[in-house]
Image (cartoon, rainbow, N blue to C red; front, side, top):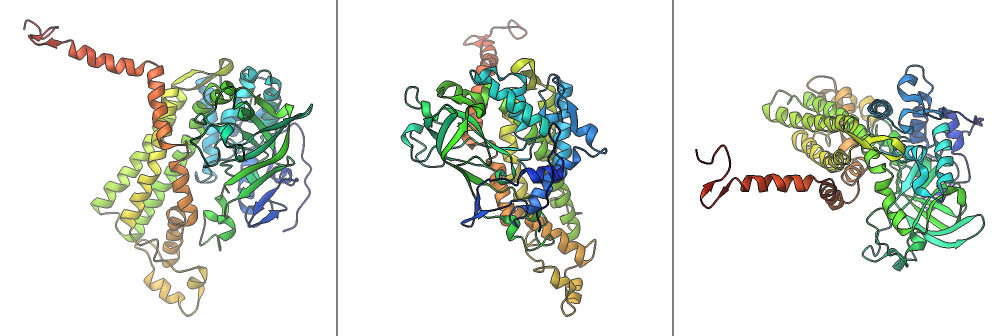
Amino acid sequence: MATTTTEVRSGQLYTGDEYLASLRDARQVYLDGERVEDVTTHPAFATSARTIAGLYDALHDPQHRDTLVGEDRNGIVTHEFFKPAYSVEDLRRGAKAVELWSRMSYGWMGRTPDYKAAFMATLGADPSFYAPFEASGEKWYRDYATKGLFLNHVLINPPIDRGKAVHEVADVYVHKVGETDEGIIVSGAKMLATGSALTHATFVAQNAQAVMEKGRSEDYALVFIAPMDTPGKKLLCRTSYEKASTSPWNYPLSSRFDENDAVVIFDNALIPWENVLVCGDVERAQSFFQASGFVNRYTLQSTTRLGVKLDFMCGLLAKGLEANGTDGFRGPQTMLGEVVAWRTMIWAIVTALINETQEGPGGTVMPSQENAAIARIFGTMAWPKIKQTFLQILGGSPLVVPSGPGDLTSEEIGPLVERFYRGSTGDAHDRVKLFKLIWDAIGSEFGGRHELYEMNYCGNHEQVRLDMLSWAGRDGLMAKFTGMVEDCMSDYDLDGFTAAPWANA
């Protein structure tokens, strides 16, 4: 595929072509031991890049623009979720924009450009948390919102010696190795940079569970943004499911929605001061995750996206049962009903995230901490349950499909396929097409990755539950719960009831 030249306008949201043009830079992306020269044309990334380009084109489509685009308080015209929210209506409009974009990939792309907007919008509301680097925050929000930039993030240290303090793993973890008038020099690795090959920059920080010690871990106390073409920055990508997909017929999801996961490695990379948000402040580096409001906002984006995905899975399971002729059986009906219940619960959480708010940075409103915690737990529980339902009630049907399109068009075996592979509600073509889609969703390598992805979307499965407990304690909920029990116990003693309406009855 020939590379075309597209002039990128300044001061406006990217179009699809401008987005693709913006990816043609000096980024160092490695796959199968080779450097990828152009991610927009490489078979491992090109189709997914076009999927993202479609999101950018939608920003300019009269059919979608009113839903997707609005103006922030500074007059910047941007995606609705890229803006800080100052009312429930702002959150609702942001969620509707997230939903529309998500429906363009049927919920299968979890790290679209609006994901990191959950954090970046907070920089537009109040960058003072990052003093003395608040000017960096202001600059990045302005550029991000104006163009609709696409950021990935890396918060997790590689799974090596995690029981040690970060400064004890200097050969692996990202840390400052030097400083100049221009900025800081960093080395080390971070993960998990989902979709990073197709983004504009990487947001780098520590997650809250990193073991950091004041007086010893200052070089690791970093929060910064590194453009993808930063010299000394490399992406090491996992196997590409897009590249491995033989055709859209066989792999209708893998072939266009693969968000390649990668490890980011910095090798004496210079991070200019204008891209630094935290440097050397252990307490601030550890607390940004909560203090920024990112947790509250990202759960609105991610739960909305999951709701769209579960809409799709409800329809997919229903069609699978119809094709098998088991949709009228009581057992499959009850299990489909349970899947619909999971879907409806997720959308109920979205409604709560929008309508039950708390104050955020700079006078903004954001989803309540309590509902964010609920989303982080039940959102990660839904997918394994739903996948198990598919496996249980569809049985071996996703396995018994012909190997490819040629089997249906073959003069010799095509008639046999048409006879023996027909569905209860359609011909062989329709049934095979459906079960190829089902297999890609739950059984292919792409499908397996999505199960792992959804289960760990919000981080360590224990930590999200500990966070729920911690927040309940801090907000006084646990005291309320235990107080209720104490009230009950005060109603009686060894001699009988002590309180009305039971005492002296």
